[in-house]
Length: 419
Image (cartoon, rainbow, N blue to C red; front, top):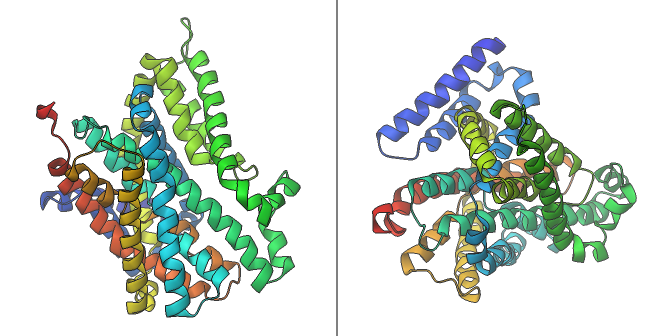
């Protein structure tokens, strides 16, 4: 298919899919995902190779847009109110889900412990691509403001991904050493600071990898946010809102690229940039948020159609009933982890708000799409099973999570007129 024609089909199809699904009162982004699945299943040979080459970059840009929008909408006072529960929501559900998934992978697929742990952390992450735009939409409509539930989930989900991705990386290195060989291990550790990177893939480094990634992400984001707030907020600045938005996006992309070499959480950095901009220069932050809302119109279609295109239904089917059993046990453990985190954090939430937090932590998509094929590509035994279960988890949880969040959210959270 001609590249230009494909782009036309891509955007028009994603938009029409969104409108059709919205017409039957289901989340519009579900229509984009479904269109992507149809496109990737029935027209895969006709998709230009350039699209697959650009897909990781385009997905990163779309994620950056939504993370910046999230950061630009979080006030310090709000973050202070949800602090302890949000931190616990970033650790407890993912770790409890991984703890439940590991014996399931060992039992049903006869994985050794290391590979079972690796597979567990492929699944043990909530999807920022699904959760963050959904929370922003609820915030903009005024739902859940009494206890700042959408902000609680935004902050917790960001940490959740840091924990899962960091531990996955550490376990991938160990699995490569044990089951593939040192040569394969060496290919996993490249960049400007090989020695430092190698340390964080040792057993000792694994103990400090997560806090270093989180603190590093916060520091990098805070520094860049402070610099941008000073630059953009100058009284005689000649930068137009579009100029500021372009600089912000490119700098955020640079942060994501640098994070490939240095051990800090890039997605957390990007969100922190927006948070600092709002804290130090609210007028500029609102200006940027308005511009990014316009960019999101196209970025949303790109993100969710690409997620759908990346799914291979036949691969998901290969996971079979054992795959469904693994996913089901993991979701039960994750849900208990959410409730436990809220209890430990003494979150002052109603029963409906607690149930909404559980539902919001169900969807899996972006992280699983990105990590699912990595063990197979690295030559890890059982990599094809890990990929199949990862794809199946997206097909099962993303639609259920989307529908639950967007249909039950307004019912479970306090309504705007109730404030």
